[in-house]
Every structure is written in structure tokens, then in C-alpha cells.
Length: 439
Image 1 (cartoon, one colour):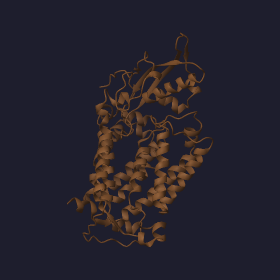
Image 2 (image 1 turned 180 degrees about the vertical axis):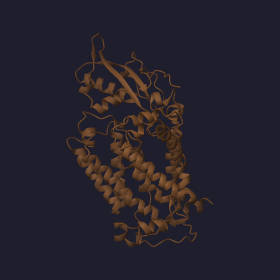
Image 3 (image 1 turned 180 degrees about the horizontal axis):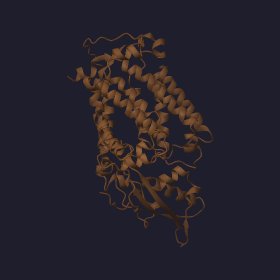
Image 4 (image 1 turned 60 degrees about the vertical axis):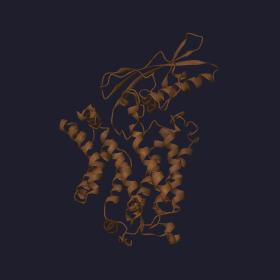
């Protein structure tokens, strides 16, 4: 039964068409970062970046090096689209994208994480076996079918992402419309729709449509009777997000995934017009790597299911502590602001220096350092190193207040703790984060 489910041969039109669109989108992602100034603001102008802790060895290239880096990234994306040296191209894009993702988190986005996962997945898929330069140069590579595990992998990965995004919204500030209202408040000056988005009923519509869409979109696309209406809703949902929230290629990438739910005949008719269809003959081809493949897929999905659950094993509310917030599909789920003061005291002396954060940080970095505990800790380490270069051994204390979803500010960090002397714990709660009063 498992062999039939995973290794049955099916038409590969969806995968081929997706590769073309995916390659185009990741090319635009790289090129867009150059021309919008994102690279200069995020990786060139700041004196340093806030790496994922443990990846401090990843640093931006000097000068305009990151512009060239992204230019090369875009070239690999174009090669993926064309199916030119596909394996090498998607491998290089994956490594380079992961490097930038881990290099800085001031501009953290769940979509960047998803793109890293997808690039890694695409490396293992036979997406270059049709309508590619590789298949044109090497006809033996050409194939019109693929094993069904490819389809299963894509659909299950999507299902996990959407389901967790839905479940994460089941908390009071989303259900009562508080957070959607705050998100829309910043869009009041939008042409044509700004005033409309401020209406009370709109925030409830956004709140509950978001929950139901994320929870039901994959089942609705799988069921033939609801597939077309679900696709129409998906177009509306993702274009709305693109227009309102300006979240890059993600809405269009999400729409491209819908290819995996439609019959190959439709894809061949509208996209791959000259592709020969693969007629289902019930053919099952069991590869020699069957056991390793099943093992790897099992481990992959255990990790993907477990990572978003890990915050339940941490003390206190993740909305407050931010511990285990990343890599958990908690997308656009809270508004967080902070007021933070860093003070430096040289050991053995009483003089106190209040740090001017603007001397070290960009405006975006200052917003993150004022509200996120891991970046506060990293900045404290940075200050300790900076003063050590001047021959001073210092303690770094933080006075911090945080507001979650517009609530009154509350004390966040224990001001008596020398944050520079603390060790970072990836899998343990940090006691210098004060308890929250969130419900």
C-alpha cells in the first residue's frame, strides 16, 4: 500500500510548471532586493548584523559585495527557471539564501524561512526532466512522469504551514479583532481602500476569514467539487495580502502551489502546451533508495510538525517571551513595541554610561533591540566586546518595557541582571525575562 502511494508514477506537469514559476519568483526576489534598496539598508549600511545565534561566522561581504552576491543569487534563480544545470543552480541558491537568512534577523520573515525550506526541497525533486535546457541537451533525462511521493511531499509541507498558521490565530487578541484592527490602522492612508479597512466588521471578517482560509484551503483544493471556488478565494486572499501588506513574492508563490491540485490536462492546455500527457497505467517503480527515502521523509515531517510546537515546552507565553517564536509559522500574529535603555558599568567602578543606541544601530535594528530578548542579549554582548577593545571590563544592564498588541507597557527584563554575563540557551527559558501578565 505504501509503495503504491509513494512510488506510483503520475504526470509531472505540475512540477515542471511550478519549477518555471518558482525560478522566476526567486529571481525576482533576489533582483528586487537590489533595486528596492533592501540590501543596502539591511546588510551594507548597518555596522553589524544580528545573526541567528550560533551563526556569527556569517557576515555580510564588505563594501558593495552583497549587491554582487544578490546578483549571482538572481542568476542562479534564472538558471532554475530555465532548467540549466538545475541541481547545481538550486543547490547554490539554497546555500546562498540560507546564508543571508541566518546572517540577519532584523528583517525576519516567515516567508524567508519557507523559501529556504522550499529551495532545499526542490533540490531533491526531478523538476528539470521536461521543458528545460538540461533535458534538451541530454534527451535521456527527459520524462513526462514522476513518482507520487513528490506530490505528497509538496502537499503535506503546505498543509503543515497553513494549519499551524490557522491554529496560531486561535488566541483572544485575534479572535476579538484587536490585532487585525491594529494591522489595518496603519493602512488608513491607502488609496481607495484605506477608509474601508477601518470599519469594525472588516476586522472581524479578516480575523475569521484568515483562520478558516488557512485551515480549509488545502482540503478544499484536494476535493474536486470545491477546487475551483477555493482557487478563486485563494486568488482574492493572496492578492489582498500582496496589496495590503507588501510581502514580496509569497502571495504569488502560494498561488503557484495550486498547480499541484489541478489535473495535468489543464496545466498542459494553458501552460505547457506541447507537453505529451502521461496516461495513468498504474505503473509503480520502486527505486533502490526506497528505505533511505522513506526514512528521510519521515524525519523531515517529524521535525516540521515538532518545531512549531516547541514553544509549549517553554515557560510563559510565547507572545511575551518570543522564545520559540521563529520557525513556527506564527505569521503577522502580534504587534510588539518596546522602550529599552542599556547602561554600561565598568567593573570595580561606579560610573554609569547610558548607551546611545543610534551610535551602533540602524533605525530598524533599534526597533528590534527594543522589543526582542535575543537581540537585546546580542547587543549586550556587542557592547561588552566594544568596551573590551578599549581595555574596559564592563557589565551591561537593561531596563526594558514591552507592549503587546497595544496593551500598557510592562517591565520585561530584570534590570539587576548583567546581560553580558548571561549564556544564551536555545532550548531553555531565560529567567532574566520577567513573567508576563498576559492572559
